[in-house]
Length: 105
Image 1: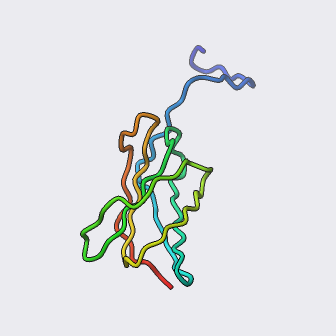
Image 2 (image 1 turned 180 degrees about the vertical axis):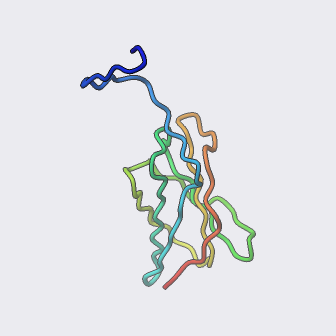
């Protein structure tokens, strides 16, 4: 539209949301079950989440789970005390990685 004109219409187009901040991971242990929350508000290309667990910053892949909305909850069976998540696209490429977080509980 020319400069100075307004329009009341919304136009749909392909949009790729790539937040400027990394994904967020939180994890809580209850008994023998670890519940991981993977969040990346505004990211549109996330197909799956990879959960990494370990100790002392030495992490290994534990599981993957399909993206399931803003807050994807993933159950993991591990005795590790740190967690990290990676957002994966449909081809398995890493789109973003969270900080390493302590597991609470």
